[in-house]
Amino acid sequence: MSTPLADFKARTESTIARAWQERGPLAWVLSPLAAVFAAVSGARRAAFAAGWLKSVRVGVPVVVVGNVTVGGTGKTPTVIALVEALRAAGYSPGVVSRGYGAKIERPTAVTASTSARACGDEPLLIARRTGVPVWVSPDRVAAAQALCAAHRDVDVIVSDDGLQHYRLVRDFELVVFDHRLGGNGFLLPAGPLREPLSRHRDATLINNPFERALPDWPNTFALKLEPGEAWHLANPALRRPLAQFGTGQSGANSANTTNSAPQRLVAAAGIGSPERFFATLRAAGLAPQTLPLPDHYDYTSNPFADIDADAILVTEKDAVKLGAWNDARIWVVPVQAALDHRLITLVVEKLRGRPSA
Image (cartoon, one colour):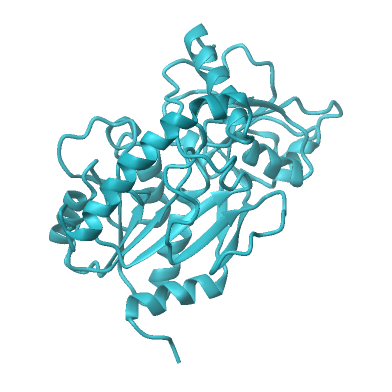
């Protein structure tokens, strides 16, 4: 059950997110603070550009997958798909990440058995899905150097977020948006932007589940997240197509049984934009009750304890924090990012320093 503090935080975040989509009274009241934020962040960018603040090249090419807005946009599935694409192109990639929410004192390697509390939910998911070396640290330069020292075969690093971590020299910047794009176009705290929309980048990727027209920006591509078969949290070998959750089938042993009563279905998501997950399920023909949770929800309390449901669908990002739970109702819905081949070609050409034949 969620706590009053958690409920208040969720309501506050929802109110701010709505305010950031329009230039209403709150945005204009906060616009002087946005001007201060713009001056400070702009001065910092200029200091790195002029060499007054030192940037570090770690010895192998670096691709940064990040955003200029606050909140989740689909970076983690993008990183996973990009790692797989680079591996298919002949590279041996590694990944660095901040390790959001974890107390990390020094660069730390992440393995499939690492606790999410020790490394953060997203790095753990990336490590489990890709099997490549993953290191975490708030200092991404230190994380990249430690990764390269421990894995001499790694010849390209993908940074999960870190677009504003200018100490790390990067060879390719991929900025990811969702359907909200830049919101009202204001910088923090009047709007969702960490940097201006005009910020230079090598390519833009838009997570676009509602199939809205892409903006006319250079090197802009659509990101499609395709759901796979759901797997059972307590028994990962047990899998079910999403369509089955719209029938009377339910529970861990429901693959071979059918009930006449409709299934009571709940979908929960502790990601940056829970509605994207819910929209994915609706597109698959499901009509679940929904439980949006704060991004990086830690699950120290059980939000499902008082829920009356036959099945609860969660994201992979949530699942890495639920491994010890004994709730047979929980099923995990994986998603696969489908990257445009033109984007992959653009990344590889930039890394190789020349257009491919």
